[in-house]
Length: 355
Image (cartoon, rainbow, N blue to C red; front, side, top):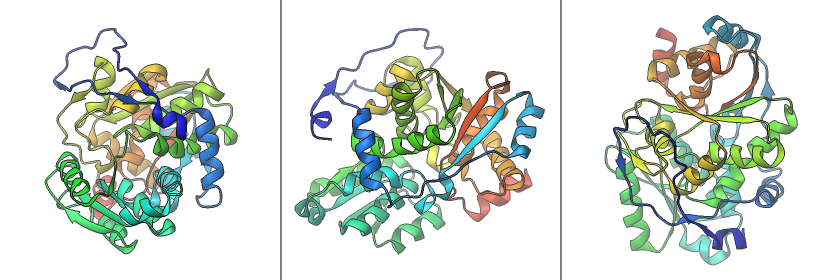
């Protein structure tokens, strides 16, 4: 990533009507330069054989469900990143990052903050590369994800009530130990690795007209925008976030980084601020940004369980929830839906089935 890590963008507003915002602006930071398509292709070579080439599948029951919701004629293709190592797409970026470390960087190690999937991805990659790894999670995390991180050999620190509390503590740990702080969004090398999922999907389903991607910090959606812009400029990339944690959505609408309430049940979407790198990419290429409520996400989880026989965590079901909630935007189209993760806890699945 040499040169692309040294360049920087200036954060500028895209203009337009931001609507009524209930969020708080953040200072405009210097924005790391996004990865290029060359970086994405290099990542694909680097992680080849170390990640799962996840299937892109059609499910007639899901097509019937979205048609009943009002998206008549829509044909869905689900990119099953819930079948990836660690149960989520993020391992692609984590491996791409840590495989580039030298021996000294691996000895110093990494510190990360996460509600689960970013943590599991980094712990997996750290074990694969022999890198010391400490993960800071909010207190009372998803027990499935916490156990998985510990089982992968990472040290786990529980701190605070939210993702943002954990982020602050992770920064303190990194400053005290000299370890590399690895965020989930402002990391060009992570985004390049994550982008390999979209690269695969366009090889598997080159006729897509719309691609719907869930957003917490935004690495998946930014990655999709980068690849679509280079290889499929006619493809509309649509982001979706939980209405109870709308910081990325509100940042994109406002054209500036925002903080917002962070109350969603969907752990992978529970982020309270926008991130400079991913927002810069989304402003350049994203076609639309939708919100869905937590009940709609749970309903989409149920559809995955009963109609596709697959497990999606809340964040993983958000893209399908967007099609079910905003059907007019997808009627009559070939729609890629990213099922980004499958690390759902028992209580979460019970709630979805009971809905």
